[in-house]
Length: 341
View (cartoon, helix red, strand yellow):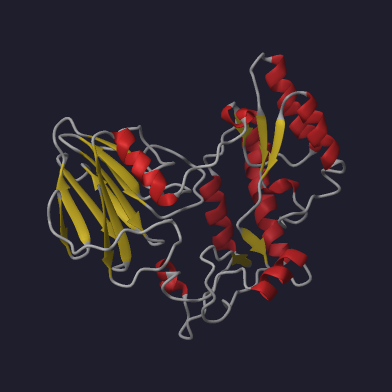
């Protein structure tokens, strides 16, 4: 059984393929107070979900926040990582699935403050909540998949081992990685490339100096049964004349300053409602909506951006990365750069 509840005036995220008729909220297993939800956790109850996150499969005993960050230190004390997956399954006396449909911040206290208590607190008062009851976690997940759509089936090689790190900035480095695995008799199915392969960090480009024969490198890796997987950023570089950026402007692909869509970032808006973005990038609008005007974006010079990347590479790739793979100082390097501006 699935129930849908609507609070306030939610942003349409297009996450749900079919929506049951909205019901009026009644306190039951969860009770609502000030747009937050609270419930009890039994002694043996297991809490699954929240997707790509820290800690183990059972999420009890920690505080999680759906607030995506580009934090390179994926350590156990963190409360948030790259992805926000607002779906939980409580498996105790009964099985209950909880899906919070919102683009905003949500805080989950899963036995952290009190080992026998659960709280779910959306930052915004505008969201939809789905509760799914079932006989087993599998049954709940099956209903949830019908709600949001079934996942695509990846190719077989995608289930293998992939080597990924920031900083592979030449064809020879990629070859060295592949050879290192082979020499140490470790299977390898994929090598992921971060933004270093691009021409000045622009999506859908290749740096011809550092990767002069990218297509040949892809074929060379595939001959070794290794797939080369290049990153494509959701942030398109703001550069006049860059065809991808110009097309995005012309066709309205980028985020606008509708305060409902970017409610988490209102503190970064000026008095006119324009968003100041110090990174000089334009964010993609995944909602398909067309409200309001363009963001006002503060420019950062090409020299400034290059200085940041050079500084990071010097600290990590040369001094730390090649030696022992340690990237734990990345946040401090960025902070030092920002203070120097």
